[in-house]
Image (tube, rainbow over all chains, first blue to last red; front, side):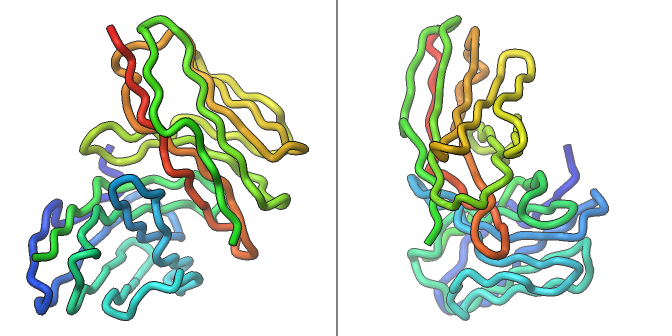
Length: 113
Length: 112
């Protein structure tokens, strides 16, 4: 299934670097999400976009900056990250809001040195 | 805030036996309860979901039951197979924005 594609799959960066994660969905959905998945913790919702408009920001530090230029693309811009930000970052999309099935990408495994 | 509790965190069963994973939620307005399976190194995949207007849903070896009064729902896997080994997550739509909140996951191991 290639409905939701994330790049890169792996990323190693220093704390002073700037990088971006990309997500693209080919399912015609109108909502897109960023989640953080750390070991032994629940999936944490970070941001929600619905029809390109940000509808949710779960108290995420400003070193994470989302961008949604259209309903098919979602970016997560990273700047001055901390070691505790090392995790798997998952993108998902759905038709409608949170009470509809979400389809996930394969994620980006991020390691902060 | 609203949360979803999931138990157990790990579960080992013999091949052919049944496995049951339970979740509780706190938001009485929750209406949508999906279950995801995540194999090692792969994406979470929706395996079954249920809405509050039904009490049970079944798809081959997988079933989900919902008790709205008690605010808990369960995943049942019968005749388990080694390929069922994975982490399973429950979720519920919570809060004013009705966004999904996930449980902490259950590592299921099916022993051959």
